[in-house]
Image (cartoon, rainbow, N blue to C red):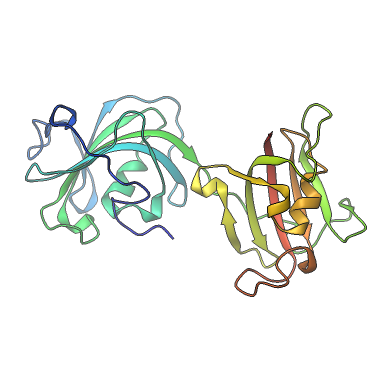
Length: 257
């Protein structure tokens, strides 16, 4: 879980004095053309983005940002090469509301009153945010409860359905290292893990994962996306700390090392 705090997933790098952004001139006095919203939130677009898509209340976003307290104290600043992937519900309330007003590529300043900082400060905050990417939460498959009639089944009991074809003829071998994006659900539709939500693909050797993955990924081509129904015996039969029973994974094979 990602704690509701600005200082998450990243350890702020030491900044040279020249690298520290100065507080904006309108830190304590939002301009007249700024947008006034509910509960005292004020925002102003600094740079226009592209398109019309806004993050939803349950989406994940990749952002770059700078945060000041309303007294001008710098809280955190991400360098141009840095970014943060965070779920909108895990942002402090005012920041999440501001992010939902944005489109990819947009930069926006938000004056967030103390009541919308999630208890972080009574002073309020000013946050400059650049929205780099919207990452949608993977939808629960309609056929999560059981493999459909059209799924292919192997001798081991593994079932699968290709969602998007790959390219080329090469497939991973048992000793290959692969890079994938994946999401996993129990058969009641509960998501228990997703590299998509973390915004970072997973890399591993096929000998280091559950048996269902070792077998299933050897059936895939680079670029392919496949749904697997993995019986309990090919998942975590000896690890009660992991989800039990049949598990369903959507796996996208990005690269074969």
